[in-house]
Length: 448
Image (tube, rainbow, N blue to C red; front, side):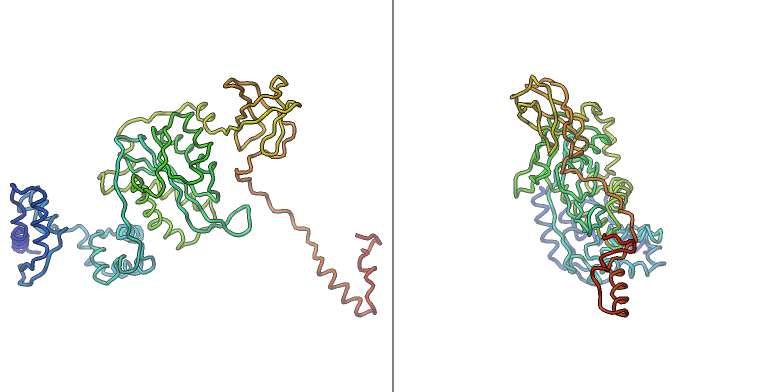
């Protein structure tokens, strides 16, 4: 655009907003004027008339207040050359939106950059897709919005949630299982602290994600969760109590305070799950590997719209986090159960029987154990250590709620029983009446 046209555009924009730039106006009065200006028809420098949206007028007012008339001049975008030289990018962008209507302009821009090394602005993509009738609202995509909140510093409050995902092949059972994503977000920095996909939605799966998050990022002051069954279980309450974490549950049917988490859930659905399902998911290991790479290299490294920083940079700006005592962490993630000692000085736990000190007969004791190794159980009585529980009958090495390791397939014997029956039947048909007694006897004369 020639310089004279830039000047004419700037003057036109100021003429539109002039009434709203008076310094004596209160915010309420300026808002009323802007709303009225958005309903007028304005004559453009080329002689055409059009209405201008309130958002655009607000943007022009802010630009003029911060930079004067020069700030109203059109800005030459860095992607203009790319757009003019590669019009096929918009065709590909349209195909990407039609393939998955929930794809945002940001995600489409990222895909084009990853494929072609050319960055097209989100605003340009959004405008071109809207002109072609391919905006997400027209295609029926979910456009819900959620509230805002922010903690004062990193690790002041972590938000946890479980997100339902696709059906994924399971290594231990036939068929597929619905994947559940346990994830934790730092409220201040918007950092995705840790997340993992699991075929199980139970307390142990949630504990393992929390344990990894603590090892990576330190101990939070608060843990803010919903009322799902994995989050109201006693083991998680014990974990938080041992580590000094304040456990907070949101009120049922009250999403206030969870807007940031819901926003991230939408980003995961729109940008990760859409692409993962498009290429197919071989199993949980592959799904977790891809999610970890995407979380660290994309989500935690992008500039956040509200903070104007990357989540990882904002998280690290506050300095080192509080590191936990390893022994305390080990104790925090053990489970606890109350049992009555029998007359034979034994206790039962998840199908196993253990012997304890005879002096504890008839007493109620606390058993503390790692659900992934039930061969080691410590005994506590009235808050004091009372030795260990020695395995007497150990039928379960892990707690029933802990997933077992996948068993290797049994070696094939190569026996085709029905083929043997068919062969004997055909021979008998050729030789005469079938003798089923002979059929049941092998060549060595032995009855199997």
